[in-house]
Length: 426
Image 1: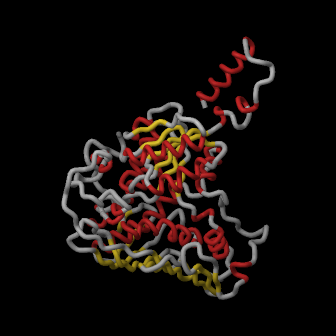
Image 2: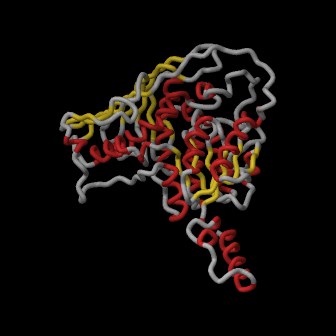
Image 3: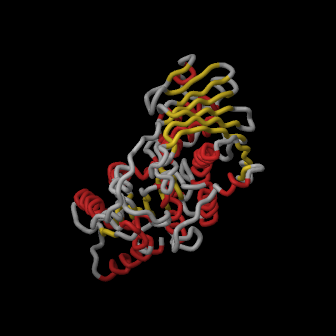
């Protein structure tokens, strides 16, 4: 805001000396550079470009000033797309994301990196005065709690980046259940994509295109292998992610918590079993089934093998067979009839998470998927993974965010970061 105020003051001073009486609208109007929210893009892989960069380029009140990636080719591609969109050169390129965070002319950052970077980058950006929109999920329960507390303390805007709450299917399902259209909610059933089996690979030298040590960042050191950093194979490595389960869980499980009115808390019990590719570096769970129990009596079952979501109540059921595929119900009126004016209307933004983020940067309100709710959703995934890794049922205290009577499980709520990276001081 100081930068924008200074620009307007300097323009006003210049007007009294040399500018014409009528200033062009593009200089001081709503499309003026000083009225645009300036964005730095951190991570320009496939999703970073085709989803996140493209969405911000479409927003008339945003201006992408810089792109960053540890792959030079990806960074160059993103800068070229940005410059062509604006019809002029000037998008700066950075291999080290800290250069973007240190720029006073950038208001906010979009983080589109592997999961092990999400919380650390977000925390560093917030401490440097940036608003943040970041891909999901967090890597651990402890990281999510730290980030949520930091956002609250700082007053910065943080958006967990998913589109689900802007999609009609999931918004309508949550509203229908919350408005009692299936009676008392009793059970939720979710299917999520299974993982994949990849063979091990021989270590080799990293390509010149990649700053590999910076790609690893806070993750344990590991020799470079061809697919470790490519085509989201990293999502199947425990050091960088929680697998397909945590990737897709951040979608369907958020709607499950939303509809269950438990988006600010969590379950009391979790019991999961899964299979992994033994002996492979790609060691997250492939097939899995997890059961959760909530204090309100609702049971949540999650299985691998699809992208479905269904809610079952005392008076009927509703759901969707596959990702954003349409609505079905025991009675079509459950999902077909609009929510009346005096009913419960859940917060959404039809323009999606990027539009919602920009609006909230201006109003300073929470976005539709803020840090706390994102943390609680990611915690469902972390709870399931911990239960499966220990092969045991666990009791969870959602208020204090700790396992009851299981020290080993509690120790798995966090992971050490490779030096010199540190969540609180980096």
